[in-house]
Length: 403
Image 1 (cartoon, rainbow, N blue to C red):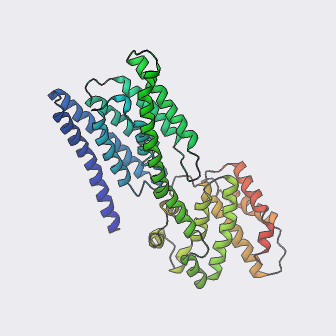
Image 2: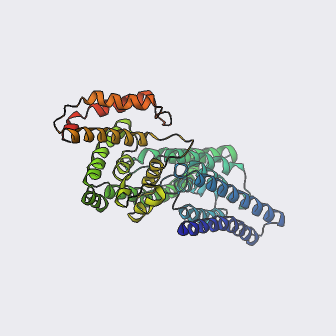
Image 3: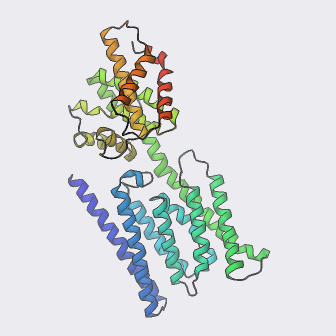
């Protein structure tokens, strides 16, 4: 608890630093570029208002938990703050170079992946506005082309995963940036279209492409793949925590292993988060090692073993569901798998040679949950429930191996 308080204090200080740093850097840049006192005051007030809006959105997103922020940004919050500081400085520097060369498209993507789509968009709009205010003859034309190009790029990269093909999203984003740059020259600067007009868009595209590829490579290695690698380690049946469970309580170990198999099959069939389902199936009862079951009592086990933030969020929601909020399909997959496996193991423990009608058992489990109203809190449709039922019924051969 003490560590959480210290961490929250540091985050609050970072958010305050965002407000102060934004005001100071824009004020200083406006002053040293000989802006009028009115312009200095305007730039400073507007920039602080922009930073305040971004901070408000961050606080609101964080308060709602991991689901509002992408990847592990809910925990590694300084990632966005550092990215914001860097892009803020660049926004000031951009005002000194021709506006057709600003590589904002790639910066929009970076800010969005460090937070979420909405925050990335608003941050990008704010930073472009700062650049426009600071340049000598800024106008709405720059806002037009860079905000629209940034919106397209964010939409293209919003579902970035390890196996995502980035070729087409990159091509579409760069092509739209080129189109908007040409449109800016023709519509706002009243230039005649010619081959020479394509030189500055070409340079801009090369800058954006270079920044984007470098950033996506680093982001993929240190954020996306890192989480996937951690899942691969802790979802291995030979992971030390599972080995300890096997040595201390074989019944719980095999219950976890078999539950994970069925729950993962359900998750794959529904195209939901299979790795989180498997992880939750393995470890949601790991507290038996210490004779504990409440989240606050078992949380340290997951933290000590470096569980990904996403995995801990699923485990938290499964162990202690939030009131007045729908439970996920992933949670239902784990619960159905666990109830089914526990029922089969119980029947076989009573009579190892018992003939079990698996279809009837599965139907009775789901029918009871429906009649008891246990499913009303889950975010699941009747069609998805039928898919779950069919998947469980396909695994009859696996159930026979439990004997």
